[in-house]
Amino acid sequence: MPSNGWTSRPGLALELVLPILLAAAGSISLATASASAEPSARSAPASSPSPAAPAASVWKPTETADTVLHAENVLWSRPLHDALRLPGWVDVAVDHRTRFEFLDDPWRPGESQKQTQIVQRDRLRLGVDAPGGIRFLGEFQDARVFNDRPNDFVQAEVDHLDVLQLFVSTTRKDLFGKGLRVDAHAGRMTLDVASRRLVARNDFRNTVNAFDGLHLQLGSDDRKWRVRGFYTFPVAIRDSDLMNNRPSTRRRFWGLAFEDQRNPWLQLDAYSLGLNDLPGNRSYRTYGLRVHRKPVPEELDYEGEVAAQLGDRRTAAQGVRDQSAWMVHAELGYTFGVAWSPRLAAQFDYASGNDDPSDDDSHAFDPLFGARRFDLMPTGIFGAFRRTNIVSPGVRIGLVPTKTVRLDVKVRHWMLDEARDAFAGTAGPGGGALTDASGDAGRDLGTDLELRARWDAREWLAFDVGYDHWWKGRYLDQVANARTRGDADYFYLQSRVRF
View 1 (tube, rainbow, N blue to C red):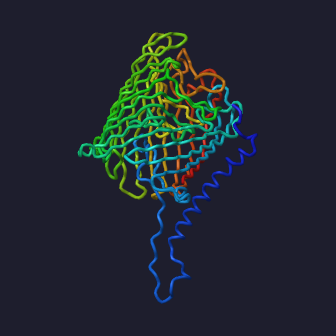
View 2 (view 1 turned 180 degrees about the vertical axis):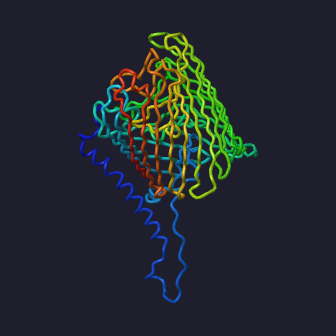
View 3 (view 1 turned 90 degrees about the horizontal axis):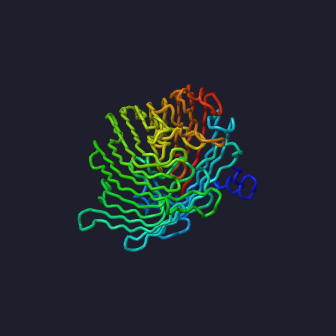
């Protein structure tokens, strides 16, 4: 893929300078607000000093039109809103992220031996709250990759200036005087469902899944439970076009979900998802159940999720194949009541694969539109593992030294569920996913160690740094077309500015 902008000096300068401008603007706005709130020492009489006025607060929305659609926190303070002197019914916000990535000893066919990339993502949010609970929201995104070479891995990272969300919504609270709430959305939107493993508004990935359609929910005003349904057309990302991401009426995605958080010991998600993808030759129904408890100091927490996928898929070699696949996630953790609040958790993930890729049945689980960074591994130019044909036990340790710093250590062992099926996360510039039809290469994919640190320096400024070492297993030594046999190293450094 071409380098998307290094040859354009004005465009490159803007991309590199923008983070500095954003940080400066946020600092100036906050400083100006603070200064304007303090009485002038020169104007106050010496004999009767005035008490210090409270610091001026920066406007912050309590709810936005998309708050109920996804889990991402979009309720940060808005210095830009105050600088523009906008009324409270208008919302304007900017979000900029830059990430440097390095990968050594990759595995995908045709990849470069060493890869360095700079990925950048800019978002502009424009919202209007009209009378009667009517809201409008537009969210625009520009996602680009710099410093990539022809044989580097660039997938789902580029989306030139486009519409991420554009919808109208209505909200009715305390319906019938029963403490019920109804929300309806129509237009283009992003979604999180249940654990986000199958439907997610992507975060680490540079681009985001979007859907054109309808979303309706009924729940309690305190958001302790809700029933939600949606009927949409997934939006196809065209990385080289401006404002041209479009849905296809031949791809339909719908779902119904129940989410209940009333019992802190037993929080429940149940969902049914349908996908009819004619261009992709997929027609699935996915049924899932999740039970979990959030971490609490000096107590056990847990999560269990199972999903069954039924339907059919079509391939050029075998024609129509019956789909019957499974996904399982299990986790048990404990948070110690000592300094840094260490949490130790054991994890297990399973996603079925095909035991006989040549027969008329398909057992390879399809992760649909889910995210994987939060419990599997970093994606970007790394991300070897998907929720397809994998078995992975692991251990994770989380530490919280301060309110703004979080440290994580994760170790996971990886195996194929079925040795003859494809290693799904390995399609690259030089060909499709690694596959050993004989099964002689075995199932052992190796073990990875991940270190991660996150620092929320300010409400509007955050940093994220991570390192992952993957000791490759026997499979990578034996399978044909693997790019290198050496162990892989991945590093990233990320900054994010929001105001």
